Every structure is written in structure tokens, then in C-alpha cells.
Length: 433
Image 1 (cartoon, rainbow, N blue to C red):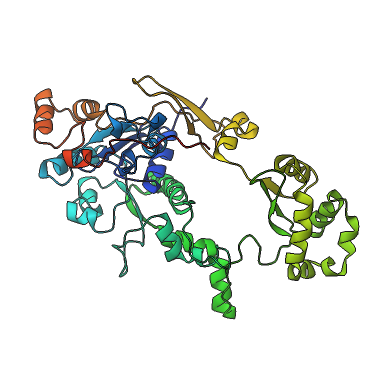
Image 2 (cartoon, rainbow, N blue to C red):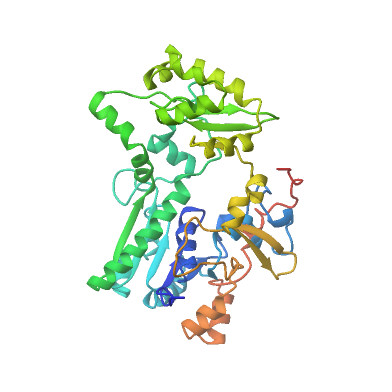
């Protein structure tokens, strides 16, 4: 096994929620020392879900702020400290950390770093080699630079939602959160590129990722079509601008569905054969790709009559075996039991020795490295769990200095009373999946 080239790279992870946490997690998975920085007055909101959902084993325990499932799955392999960056003493300590670190990751609103006095020009003065990775909503410049957003807001801002709904349901919220993990994954790649840039030039740099522009780029063909042809596509639901058949079809059983996408003549002929209806390919209404597209509603009804007689997963396997792209709709419980994901080791079992934590499953990684296998070697940290390691061993502070920081409220392991008030007193009953 090759020696890990990232073992001496240190990352200060100031991020909260999903996008920045994803970037930090990937860097931690690669073997970097990633230090997640929170404060007792503003811990990562993923630790505390005020509605009472998403706590490990549906239990609050003695320290519920360490049991948030979003936190547990987004911050594996990281160290965790607390530090109040709004205080002068907190900033002084942060500058010490910045001097011995390589990368800082953050996803605050634009303007927050400046107000805290830890923006890139300041960090560059302290450490000319520092790499600052900023995951922003709208970018570093422009009249909307300080706008805040989440995944759904970005889907609206980017234009994606204008073309991704059903024709009669424009603009409905969904449970999908594409922008966050997409931005976090891209940001991690940019951080690696920045390390290479630094090794070649001897200079650090500031990377600012605009999540809005990243998502708008995903519909670049639609933007180009309007700029060139003045066409504005309407929401098409599960249909496709030129493929047909292309849709989601009911299968045997309650709420069972299969997606089928036919892209060329070979796949169309294979589908007709599997349907036991080879003459369908010679029907004048479906003789060409254009005619199939123009008569797609009629064609969808024919396909639904066929798929509704079959089990979704069995039909998926049959279609794929015969060269027709298809997938059954998988529920969360089915994904956990899925043979393919299990054989690839995508699901990781975490055996957490902390009282009341026990065993739980977390997602793995969507990529692998042939010469440097990755794994979860450290569970997500408790709030302030590694304060002593970072402040004493890395920065050389004395026990007395660390106690003084605790007494001043600059560091700690328990959220402030105002934060504790947001923790639910009771949890809803477990929901079946």
C-alpha cells in the first residue's frame, strides 16, 4: 500500500450544514487531519434538529447535541474543537492554528469572515501558503453576494426548478438536495488542485465556489437554447426533450415503479421484443424516434399496461440484461439491503463505544482509490472533544491556559443555555420506512 501523501496536510473546517461538511469529509477520508471548529454559542446546526427528527436511535441521551444523525454522517474522520471566533482571544487562537495549517474550509454568508476579521487577506498575512476554500451561495462579488440559501433556494435561483417539475406543479419543494453534496464534492477537488498549485508555485490562494453558478451550469444546454433560439422549455415531468419512451411506469404491487429510458433504435427494438410485442416497432405511430416522441402519451399507456404485470426489480434486471436502461424505484430500506451496494462496501457499520450509541450505519464513498483504500477510522466528534489535543499538543498551551479559555467561554464542551433551549424535550415516534 502506498504511503498516504496527505497525512501531513492539516485542514481547519469552519463549515456548517452539508456542503462545506462534505468537502471536509472527503479531505478527511483522504487522510488529511481535518479539525472541525464550532463554538458553544453556535454549534453546527446539524447537531440539533429542533423538530425532534434525526437523532440516533430516536433517543436524546444525556448529550443530545452529540447524537444528531446529520452530524454523525457528515463529519466522520474529523477531529472536533470549540472556539469562539467572535472574541479577540478566540481569533488569536485561530491565527495560531492558521499558521500551522494548510487549508481552511468555510461556507458562511459572504461578509461574515470580514466581520470576524479572519478573511483571506488577513489569513494570507499570517500564513502566505494558506488555501481558503469558500463555498458561497452567490459568489464573492456582485449585488447578491451576501444572500443566504439552502438547497431548494439554490434550485430556484439557478433556474433548475423551472424545468424539473411536472407541468401542473411548477416550483414545488422536493426532498432532493443536489446542490450541497455536489458543491462539497467539487470543492474538495478544487482544494486538491490548490495543493498542487501551491507545490508548484509556492503560493496559497483563495477559492470561491458559487453554488448558484455551479447549479446553473447543469442546465447549460437549456440556457444556450434560449440565447440562440429564444425557446423556453416547459417543465416536462419524467419525459425527455427527445427520447421516447422515457418515463416512470407503475409495476405490480402497491407504490412500485420502474424508470425506463430508450435512447436509440437498438434499445427500442429490444424493449418491443421483451414486451412480447415486436410488431409495435412497425406501428406507424412509433416507427421513428420523432413519431415515438410526438405520440409518447399513447406509448406510455401501452408500456404501463405491460409493466403493471411485473415485479419492478425483476423487470429492471431483465431490461438491463437485454440492453435497455431501467431501474426500479428503491426505498431507503431497500438501499440498505441492496446486494450491489453491500458488495461494493458502500455502507459502513460504525461500532461506537460511547454509552447509548452502539452500532449504526453510515454511507460510504462514491469513489475509490486503487493504491490508497479509504475507510472510516474515526467517528464524528463530540462537541469540543479534541480541545486538549489541539490546544495542548498542537499549539503548546498549558493546562492553566486551557482552563482560562474554558472559564472565559472561548472553548468548552457543552452548548450555551440559549442553544440548549432549542433541543426538543421529546421525540416523535419512530417512522416506518
